[in-house]
Length: 435
Image (cartoon, rainbow, N blue to C red; front, side):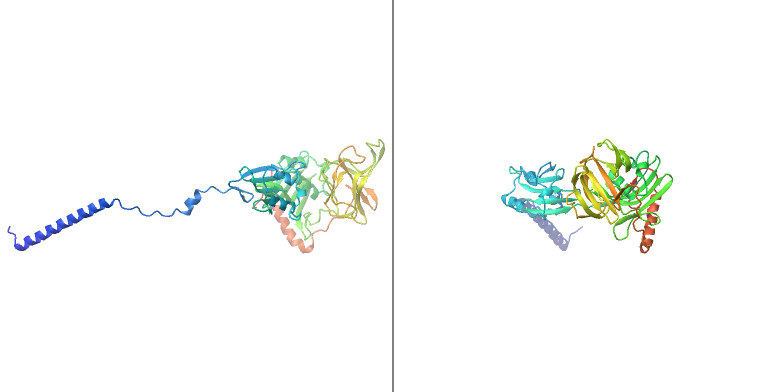
């Protein structure tokens, strides 16, 4: 094969281009080695989520950020004052002055009482500088005292949740014992008895009497703090059935039977929450102190010292004083017909004095054994037209029944409650929330 001049020229040009490209590649490689490694790409800012994850988790005590602070929880001891709670912590002179000048409408230091909870938050330094103090007068309310640059008092309240619950049972001994065995408080027993006080003799219950009860419980942060109220009751005694339905006609909750008749009388049956009757009204009783037989024209209710005594009805205080026989006592005039007396009190409630108007259920004193008494009890006296009568047997007119205008709403509510009661068996209770 013979090469033409033109083919030889093209081959030479191709070889020259290949050599040139090779030399250029070697030059680039050499330049790169001399310049060192390529620079790293710029660092991107750290995401906020990553930075926040590295921060300590915030800790709060009653809404106060407590990170970096020490916390001390305690209860107020007997005879302690508010200033005693600050001992051992540093409070600036400015804040001390503000404390001394604090208005009672903002906080009344006299109401700091033994047994109440409080929490102190302070700096973990040698001074133990006080940051805040939280005082809890009850399960719901609390007051925060902020002590940083100047005093700031912040009244607060926890959220109260109302939960509908139910309970049922068969009585073996007493109603109180039956409810207590199911972990329920005496408060529920007292509410139950107040509803049926004039219809049922709770001192003569028989074995196998039965009950079903729907009520509302108040809770704070999952803890039970009290009973809001009873919604409905079914009670069976001696084959007689009783119903109670809570209904508000505009003047507050009252209780009615299935026909809409009021279960309430003009007066509470018992001036103290359900307890033991130690001596009934009698025309002839052996007096334990005088040692003779004489009329006992009152009803003695045995109860622990300090038990609150309630006025059985609205009225005006006639007397509130002490004498040698009755001890400390209060007498209340309810109307032109009825007057009641409450004897042997350990003390009379604050503010109770002649001329003061009291409401039904208002605390007027506390059980004691002053005067002619051998032990703590209340001697309860009931007067009709100035003559003492048996408070537990007196015939009283009932309160107003369901008004016709409220009848449709009451009938609808009654049916709802009866359906809930019918779903209960005579056994331990359970929550009804959501039903």
